Length: 105
Image (cartoon, rainbow, N blue to C red; front, side, top):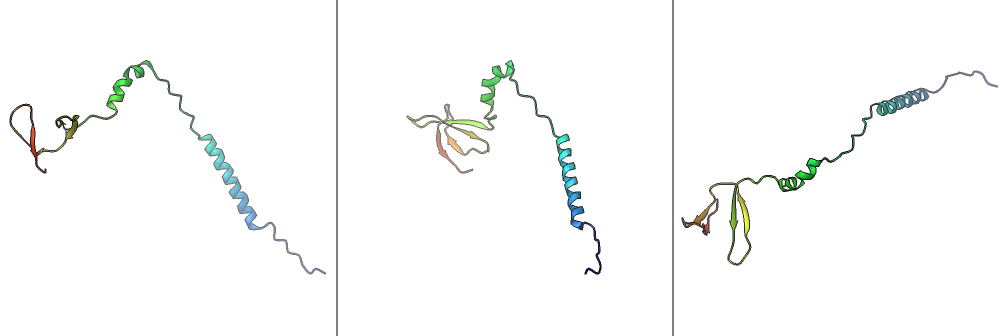
């Protein structure tokens, strides 16, 4: 024998779950609508073919400073780009410059 039956309705969490599900669906639709179109494919033109050797040379970037080439007798040339002064090279005052000694900057 049942004395009383209380009808509480659906649980509260079902309402919250339905609301969150609807919110997720709206966000997915919004992201689909706002999606950017892909960029057009790159088509190289004739100028790129002509400029390719120059661009390769300039990719290293411009050098800054004073170019100094050093060569010991019987060895290959070593290039240094001096960016600060004083250079600290002791040499005789005649051409070509021959470095006799170096000092610390």
